[in-house]
Image (cartoon, rainbow, N blue to C red; front, top):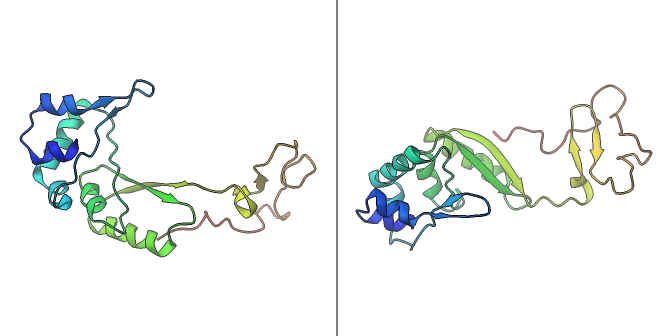
Length: 173
């Protein structure tokens, strides 16, 4: 895995032998490998930078999955080697304050945050509505009706603007 590559003098041929190809998706995957005594030393090393450069010569896109930024420095170190960062946030688990802190840490090291993925969203109760600038629409179309139950989408409060602001339509910084 990656830890073996970074901690040894594995050549390009050996590195490419460690990469598995998923037949269904066509993705090439490199697992993390055994946990080194001090992962941050390996991930922040020049060898790690060289490995990423080697991958850039072969692949058009490289996705690096890291542990949560709030718990480990690994993600911060890796972000300095990436073109951009996409946050993956589990719905209901992290606070806005933690997300703001993580964003500041990334900004402090010059990383470019390009997006956020909100996963494990429960489509129950208030989370069933998603925001558009001019109306809300219910995601439950099983009965053929939209949010207001009459078969037509609700159009906000009549003034061209939604009646309330979505919780997701706010800046995190």
